[in-house]
Length: 109
Figure 1 (cartoon, rainbow, N blue to C red):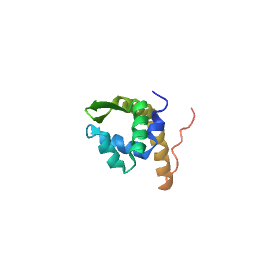
Figure 2: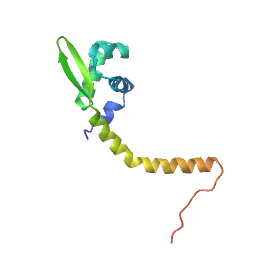
Figure 3: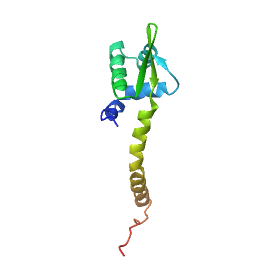
Figure 4: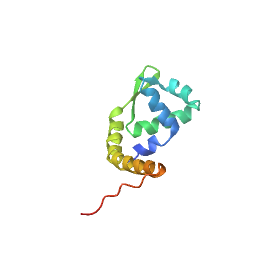
């Protein structure tokens, strides 16, 4: 997994772009309008996403059309699933504590 993928996902504007691209390809102009940012700021976000392998760019005449590259996101999801069990256990324990239930501790055998 590219090391810069988490940096790319950390920015809310870039997550907005990815959310929009889930609905299908969009032009750079469409995405710039969605972000309500300058063209240069939107271009920078798109470049970061492209370098991280999260989007691909296709030129269609004068337009640049961006497509979601979901495979890179699947890698992130796979990595995060390793921690899902841990966090579910921790949140269940917190819920029990807040409900006034004693912690479920395993006794050594």
